[in-house]
Image 1: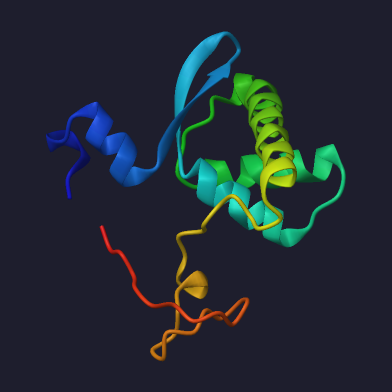
Image 2 (image 1 turned 180 degrees about the vertical axis):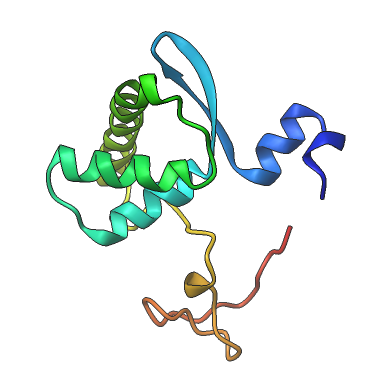
Length: 124
């Protein structure tokens, strides 16, 4: 599906773009929730280590201007911490669902990480 033929709202929904404030400007970051899920799963400790991994993963699908790398790192780390705090206060299960195949049920409908049975799958 070509991003250029979709409205901005449809593009955001289909490709996982979220808006964040970076250096006083609102920017769109693609794949932020999947990035949060991947970093959360790694169990990294320490802001510097988490921030570096977040930025590394975000750069895979987004342009980060060299002069604003520190601002992006601070904004993304702050959003990650807010999401993790929300996760801890509301539900012990992870907030994010990663989009990679390792988190999909196998052909028997069993989730590979926690072993629960999946009764239906929605594909967009």
